[in-house]
Amino acid sequence: MAKRLLEFRDRTAVVGVGYTPFTKDSGVSTLTLACRAIMAALDDAGLGPGDVEGLATHRVGDSAAPSLVGPALGMADPTWYLDQFGGGSVSHAVVAQAALAVAAGVAETVVCYRAINARSEFRMGGTGRRLPVSPEVQYQAPYGYFAPPQQYAMYANAHMQKYGTKAEHFGRLAVTQRANAVKNPRALMRTPITLDDYLASRWIAEPFRLLDCCLETDGACALVVTTAERARSLRRPPVLISGAAWGGGDSHLSGGRADPTTTAAAALAPRLYAQAGLGPADIDVAELYDCFTYSVIVQLEDYGFCAKGEGGPYVASGATALDGALPVNTHGGFLSEGYVHGINHIAEAVSQLRGDAGDRQVAGAEVALSTAQPGYILPATSALLLRKG
Amino acid sequence: MPDRYGRPPRGVRPTPDRDSKDWWDRLAGHEFTVQRCDTCHTDRFPARAFCPACRTERWHWEAVSPEGTVESWIVNRRPFMPGSTEPYVVVLVRLAAVPGCLIHGGWDGDLEPEYGQAVQGVYADMGDDLALLNWRPAE
Ligand SMILES: [Zn+2]
Image (cartoon, rainbow over all chains, first blue to last red; front, side, top):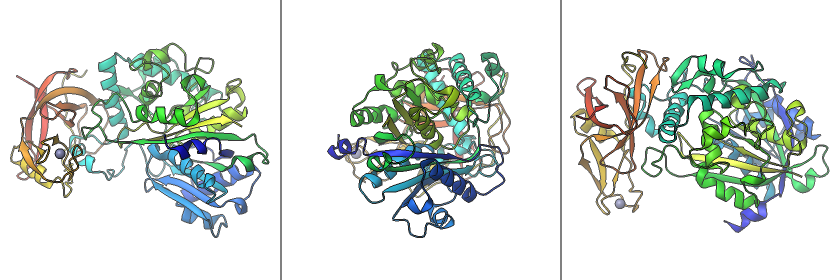
């Protein structure tokens, strides 16, 4: 454990959250979405664009850069910015890096955002999309394999074969998250579903059905990060960043991580917990990256909430429901709220810790884990531990 | 499971990079190779310049038998690219010759793959200068 990372604990805070509506066709540019979410987050924090010293985002060639967004909001001279290449695996790294910049005094207040038209312009799930640029694609695409639902289905089946994870486990997860979305006015999908609905949904790539897959969404979300000290004088209850961790290593195609049923999160989790001085038992709410049902199940294991291979039965036990031992994806997640590539998990964690999550509020929530894509496809992941200030 | 399988999209050609072009050329000649490190003799796949075990650059192509076991598979039930006929199977194979290495391929079996099933590679010619490697149950 790097000593400086311990010093970083609780030095910074999230003080504002902003969203655009989640839709299937925003009708506007990603630049407009970004500006709207940022203005909403600043308004939530009681700040204005003139208070912002830094901007941070991540993109995969699909959205507006900080260098466009800053001037569009009259921020003529940001002192710090981050334009990270990458998808869901770096969603939490963006906020972590913003927090590092704030803790280092490079910028006192930073806004992190992600803006996508992931349904109407750039379909993340693969439909009509150009092949991703990665050396590993050449070994996959000629066999008709390149899209995230295919890749995650492959890992999910490995887990099913090795540990006996069942379709009903994935289904229970989808049903549970939908029940949370019913209580979330932002959610795109607010009609309850049953296990039978799940089992009857059409095949995408076996073992995945439609209801295993997250929603391709148009929308944006933004977060305001500043020092813990400044946070105390702002209008919202501060949410402290207690831990932030990056993880990586080899991919499943390079011999270094030869078990496709375990993710980079398994290596990251002990570092994250040590940094924050917390463990799985301390966590009241977990917002776990749910591009697909299976990714939650493998993370429940890799973040230490249950034994390896037990993620499916853990979900089936009801533990991840709002009234369970570990409420997971309280907003409905990417499966039912919408998919803004990771940042809306952090925003929901902030809501839960502030106590303003309305009908889906977890009583007494004080510590939340929020995680990025756990390191399949490309070997990188990131996560945040947040604490009520 | 369906009674019979369709085929993946035709015409999606690999785009070799500067590390992998020789590998594809050899595969087109029905030779399956991995990189063997000249320093520590560790095998690796896919192609890249440095040996991750000893961090040296000297290596050679080593022909190995395309054999392995089924690690996982999917049955594609919707078109992800133009030109496929669904359902088609993509299989993830653990290579016998290279511990810890996984490879994707098409499925050349009549029945659904099974976890841990022994499989062998089948070269599928896609024209004069390209072959793909599919997999079928070992005899
Ligand atoms: Zn070596």
